[in-house]
Image (cartoon, rainbow over all chains, first blue to last red; front, side, top):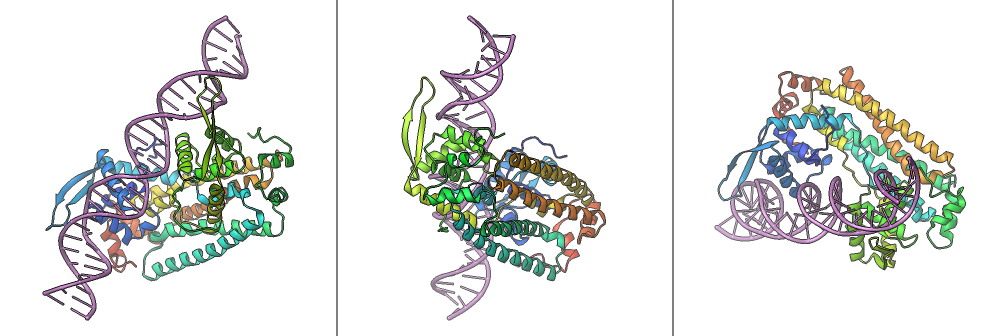
Length: 221
Length: 221
DNA sequence: AGGTAAATACTCGAAGTCGGATATTTGAGC
DNA sequence: GCTCAAATATCCGACTTCGAGTATTTACCT
């Protein structure tokens, strides 16, 4: 259970393939349409190129097997795959690890926040205000999708990942709203140095910060 | 500002390189140590192999330039790079887009949630309870790091990305806590079908779900 | 003086990722 | 019965990513 050894196959799409094949054998194209039908595309990045290489990789590692290769008329051949016992074990083990062990995810917005001082504070304010509007719109849209799914009689269990995504977006929105306020009223700690550095027209240099703080800079951690 | 054309260079590490070179010219190894010193490694995935290819890619696109190549003693050559005007524009444009436009990020936990029914509900409960403990520990540790940075006189601005990461983790913790409760007291909608499907020893099939709901399955969206 | 750990500075190849190209068949509308 | 869009099913090559390897120099300890 949740063996922490580095997994040779890491793409979540491979996990989805194992999950689908644990229901019944399929060929890759059917996997892609099934994922789309069940709206898993929203939570697991699916693209055709990756699908076929991921399937081939699973086969090489004996987690799935070719069941048959059929050809109907002159269409391209369809190769139908089935999950192996090894694949079933891997599915449970991998899922257990994903559910039990939080891992750090590197998001783009976090990267941008960490480099924020390269943009002048007033410009940042305008940009995050724009983000705020879009986040609110997105959150509302997510609510709409979930309501529609409920209306169609689908259990919450089917859209739980959407609910999770919305919870994260809400947290982001609250954070951004708070940041915008602190930028607007000037209470963000460090904003004075940041603003002065940009007044000269240049980006703030390491020295600007060093002068402002006690001086360390080379002694963090 | 924030031109939405697909960026040929997408790796956030390239953004960090542009940001560093906007301060002063550097060679790649110095970039890596500087990023580490400033704790940017926490928010921007850094690995050596990627660094050198990303730098070469930036050079090919004329966003940075070779300034000089020096050799001290018998050490390997150091190639020092400088940002170009084009690079400065790209930095501002890219940063603006990252700050203003929320994009969907595919997290592993979201993928796992969407495939959750392949594990029996009681097992899922144990797994997410473990996650809950680890999330609490992680959130506490993040608070410790931020407090220590503040103690050393560093402005909040320098650890704002850590604060954001913590806000997301807190939202995740609240979500997971809520999920665990609903699993424990059986109020999670759909749990009965889920549990019955696993009682037979098999994983729930599409038909199990189809029988349980109105029947559509092939008519979602 | 000798040894070794850490720091310096990159290089390489295997593997994975991605979007678009390809080639056929079915279906809907006129 | 003809055409054009959509569906069916996969392949390809350019580009990235990643971890591990290489080779030297400096710093420190005994």
